Amino acid sequence: MVVGEPVYVVGNSLGGFVALNFAACNPHLVKGVTLLNATPFWGFLPNPIRSPRLARVFPWAGTFPLPAGVRKLTKLVWEKISDPESIAEVLKQVYADHSTNIDKVFSRILETTEHPAAAASFASIMFAPKGQLSFSEALSRCHTENVPICLMYGKEDPWVAPAWGLRVKRQVPEAPYYEISPAGHCPHDEVPEVCIILYEDTSFILFVNSIVSSFYLKYSSEHRIC
Image 1 (cartoon, helix red, strand yellow):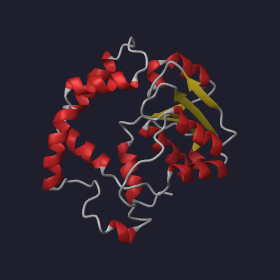
Image 2 (cartoon, one colour):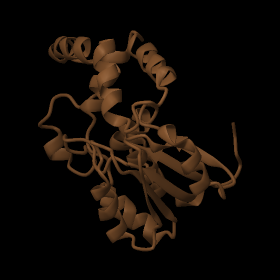
Image 3 (cartoon, helix red, strand yellow):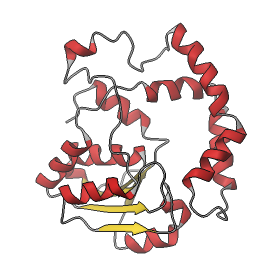
Image 4 (spheres, one colour):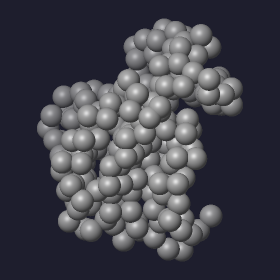
């Protein structure tokens, strides 16, 4: 689908990190960014463009194919975290209201874990180098480029607590901040009616979630896109 005009970008979790970086690097394509419990950092390995010498010290940084040693380790970890009981337990953690029907989400996650490349993709994401811009740098660039920021945080999120959203608010004081309760890590799924009301004035929304954002994250760490 080709929209043909700038869009509002909404990102949850790691998707929030990616959405913010996308907006910072492509302000002409973005009308505004909404962050839903956005991951405030990602990547522990050095960025090959910002720190080329240091990056050369690490023999592998999330590229395909996986080295044999990493592949064996990933298989052991993947067998544990892709187990249906483990997935159900994680979903219990991130949803504040346990009466929420998560059958569809559970089925989609389980289907994804059964893909032949799922384990390798997981390892690639976990070992992805840092992006060219940090979360704070991306915020500053959006501010400079007059890209509006909106903040929505599920109050009961055990992973990205609202304290992270308040830190963002201090850096961009003009950004509206909404703390939603009861809601956990995925307020757009847990209380969609609330989130829709909060951004219902947007003409077109491009949603970036934590599952489909890995390609952009990897690509931006390895290429000059800003």
